[in-house]
Amino acid sequence: MAYYCSFKPSLLFLLFFIATSQARDSITTHLHFFIHENVNRPNATAITVVNSTTSNPGGFGSIGIFDDEIREGSSIDSKLIGRAQGMAPEVSLSEMAWLLLIDFVFTDGEYNGSSLMVVGRATLGGTIERSIIGGTGKFRMARGYTINTFLSGAPEGRLIDECDAYIVH
Ligand SMILES: *[C@@H]1O[C@H](CO)[C@@H](O)[C@H](O)[C@H]1NC(C)=O
Ligand SMILES: *[C@@H]1O[C@H](CO)[C@@H](O)[C@H](O)[C@H]1NC(C)=O
Ligand SMILES: *[C@@H]1O[C@H](CO)[C@@H](O)[C@H](O)[C@H]1NC(C)=O
Image (cartoon, rainbow, N blue to C red; front, side, top):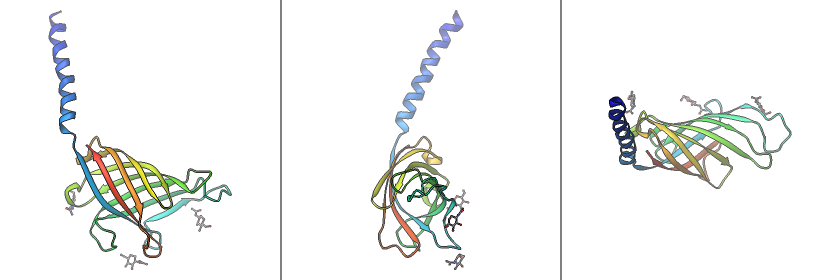
């Protein structure tokens, strides 16, 4: 009985401590960067590893793998700050649309060694919102969203994607 009485308050204290420490630590970080994809061989950063087995014009069921560059700016020689590594199965029967699974791995600057896991849709053109579902390092427990827009006028064989990430962590 004595054991039970002393145990109960300490458990309540522990739960209170966990709740308040999470609330106190949460901050919102806004990152702005550019994803550079090169589909030109031999130095392509994105490849198709599975072709569609259907006659669907959108390529339903195909799978791409990418290890794109994350750069500070839209220019090809702007500073490299990480990699956007992931996969893109084509998941729509009615249009060209992919389900992206991306690990943003930062390799320079304040977030060197930290990463963000992003999941969501991709289509050709337009502005796209995706979910940030987790992170590591400085982004542990991350939640948030990204807003991506493809830039027009990229050099032949390259895609340049402007990205704003809003991260609560
Ligand atoms: C591929 O990368 C290598 C090493 O960086 C470079 O020397 C070569 O010019 C590149 N080739 C093309 C076609 O971009
Ligand atoms: C997919 O199809 C393209 C075009 O026919 C071909 O060049 C490529 O080698 C194929 N890739 C795979 C993984 O089968
Ligand atoms: C990033 O972190 C790694 C591992 O700690 C370190 O080896 C590397 O030098 C760092 N890069 C920069 C540009 O600071």
